[in-house]
Amino acid sequence: MWKTRHLPLIIDLLFCGVLLPVMLKLLPIERWIVNDSTFVYLLAGWLYVVYLLNRAWILPPLLRRRRVLLGLGLILLTLLVTWLITRYQMDIPVRPRRIRRPAIPRISLQQQAIWFLYVVVMSFGTAVGLLTELYRQIMARQAEAFERKKAELALYKAQINPHFLFNSLNTLYGMVISRSERTEEAFADFIDLMHYMYANASQDRIPVRVEAEYLRRYVDLQRLRVPPQTRIGYDYDPDPDPQRQDRVAPMLLVTFVENAFKYGVSSVAPGEIRIGLRVRDHRLHFTARNRKVERPKISGNPEAASAAAAPGVSSSGVGIANCRNRLALLYPGRHELRIDDGAEFFEVELKIDLES
Image (cartoon, rainbow, N blue to C red; front, side, top):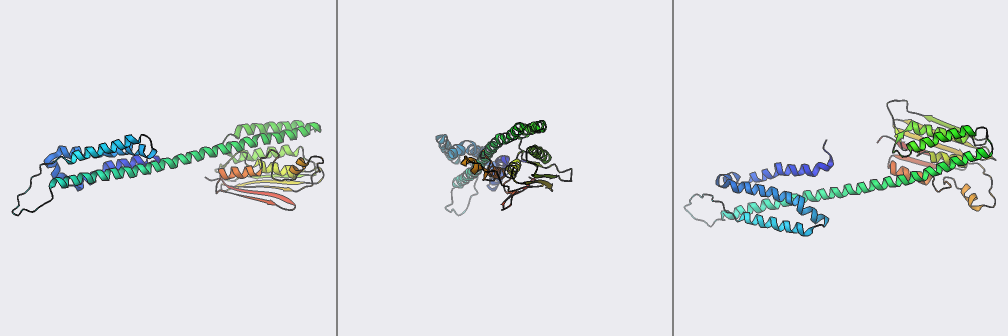
């Protein structure tokens, strides 16, 4: 299958191999060959030279405003050589006529035909050159947008990684201070999470089952530090068809899970957190739901109190807004994000079309 970037070359070959010979055939080429074959071959060769000069050396400098004098000089050169060719007069025998009429000199008809071919060749080459330059500019803009998109995604990932690390270490710190019996188990889960993060976070896509396992380990780590009155549920329902190996961007869902644990856990009130992940027919359905709980009042620190009352925004400034930006870059027009900030529950629902 020919690629789109080869289209200008294909057009050049069609013009040189088909269109130009057809145009020459429309002229009285057979009579010309009989009387002066050298001139005909010279004319045909010159037309090919004009086309290639226009495509390679005349139009590109003029469009890109580089070596403009070279382009203009080559135009004048082609005009001069074409004019010299028109000055050549073929010796074509003429039947004697009884009545002499003022007729158009045959040299004039020959000149008109040559100038006509010159204008057609230059015009067609210019049109192809303009289309080629337009295509080049479009490809350059797309490449620039792609690189900018990669840079933005890399920035968002760079923000997520330290934020996740801080939250996990904060959990471990709390367990160490409280001398929890499950601290060793928590460190084992933390090591597994770190292995996932550094093994997969740099990839563009990973299997959904790997992302689901990462979320499960994160939920298990959080279970170790939350009060017993907090009910936690995590459910992963994979696609039953083993032939469908859907892939998703790594660390895309963990921010919503972090948000649920941050604002759904309290030491003074019972909490409830439900995380769900389901995949069917190349569509991912994710939900994160937490009960809004009463949080301990933080006295003497207005900034901390304000941060505690702001669901959806992480302490490091990376939160749901970050996820919105990543989704817009990774799945434009292929995702639905619904956030319901109700009186009793805070719920996030995300649907992604994984089939590209």
